[in-house]
Amino acid sequence: MNHKVEDHIALISQLYPGLYTQMVPKQGESKPRRRRKKNTGEGVGGARKRKLSAEQVNFLEMTFGDEHKLETERKEKLASDLGLDPRQVAVWFQNRRARWKNKKLEEEYTKLKTAHESIVVEKCLLESEVLKLKEQLSRAEKEIQRLSDRADRVSTSSPSSSLSMAMEPPFLGEFAVLEGYGDAFYMPPENNYIPGMEWINQYM
DNA sequence: GAATATTTCCAGTTACATCA
DNA sequence: GTGATGTAACTGGAAATATT
Image (cartoon, rainbow, N blue to C red; front, side):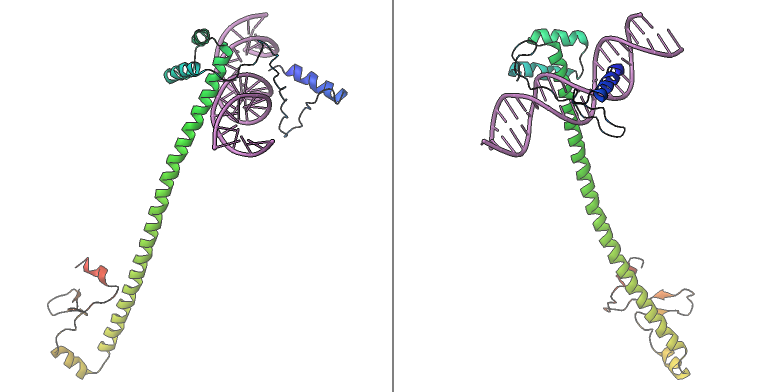
């Protein structure tokens, strides 16, 4: 790009406002783009060619399938084969590359979106699982507290009661210490479900 | 080696054709 | 007639390369 030309235009537009519709942008502003004249079909080469023919497009597509960029010689050969201006072939390839890139981006976006959605679903499931487990833990802790309180009451009660305890079979569902066994173990209550204590069976 | 010109590519835009 | 969409062509900037 010739910056001297731009500087001249800027100077002239300052000296003669209105002569050029394009004003030089201030720093930080986006440059106003020069508007193209409407094509009247009187330009270089006569009437403006619009749509390329189906055959031309097919051939260009085939070539694009092989190579996304053309060497100068290849471009000129292709242009002469198709009866087009090399510039047209170059422009077609530029536009085609842009379309291809957009399509790739869209595909990538769709893939990422799908992956994101499935991860969000998985996250929700895991969060609800965590909630369930927290509830279970809370119930288990309450149960442990309840049993611990009961054990305290038993140990601080009258000797007669401790005697009767000695004669009775162990309380089902109680943590107990049997003679000869140093470790506490859990005696599951027969047909006696304690809510929130299911987890403990996994470790029995 | 520095300055300048040329070429090529890309991103964004415009003009126009076509279709619902 | 009109808005949406697709596409050929254009613009300006950046980077690479050639020339002076």
